[in-house]
Image (cartoon, rainbow, N blue to C red; front, side, top):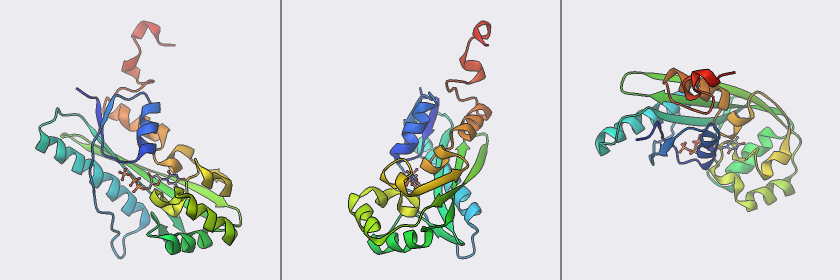
Length: 206
Ligand SMILES: Cc1cn([C@H]2C[C@H](O)[C@@H](COP(=O)(O)OP(=O)(O)OP(=O)(O)O)O2)c(=O)[nH]c1=O
């Protein structure tokens, strides 16, 4: 019996949730990521997080797995009003990076938790400043393979970190799961993590 299901294929989300000390089971799902023509980025990222969590809950029912809350999450970038998702290929990645070069962009990550009784969602926005990038670096970065499965085509936690001048907000949210806000959601659903109030026997609390 698990405390939580993680509706995500992202190895980063698995690792960050593991750092919270949550007992969880991953659920393999694929939810189409398509933004409505006029859909604002903040609404889009929250909708996707919720759709992933809801799809996970539906899957539990179908597979007759024991009930537990399901967590879904989504990350996008926004630069000069353009939404930045995973690159479709080399040219798309280069177009995104030329836009982001030498200026700031926002990374939005939404986290949703759904149980049969209720659902909750939160969104964290972090500003990331990129230094000026040159074409040779962009080509070398694409060749590394790292950009392919990441929003905006970069990983702050990897080779892409060298492009980041500074950030304001949550580092873990940029990597894919804001730890502070996720712990808050887990508390709302009584899911134990290492600092959960019920996780430490009363007499031993500081
Ligand atoms: C900006 C940035 C994004 N990312 C990642 C986080 C997300 O995993 C990914 C954005 O894609 P998402 O669609 O949010 O997630 P995903 O497809 O990887 O996983 P799933 O939908 O199954 O949960 O980009 C980094 O790892 N580092 C970064 O610096």
